[in-house]
Image (cartoon, rainbow, N blue to C red):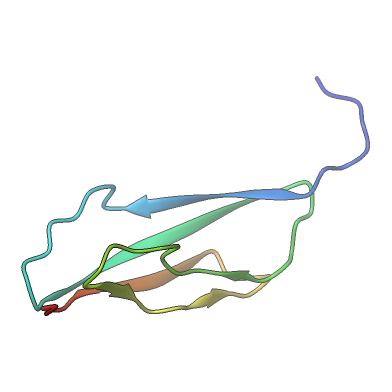
Length: 78
């Protein structure tokens, strides 16, 4: 049992948890949000500092959305 003021927060779960992508290809993963203590804010997804040649879509989970698909892509680099 916890007695305290609410601490709105969230966790993300990615399915599948591991992905193999060939060069110049794309894959999608499903991202699920677990909201806690009334967190209802938007969550913008994307890759932070991806390696060269990797990119992703940048979907946003709205306050009432539980899942979104994130597209991952690879490209040839010079």
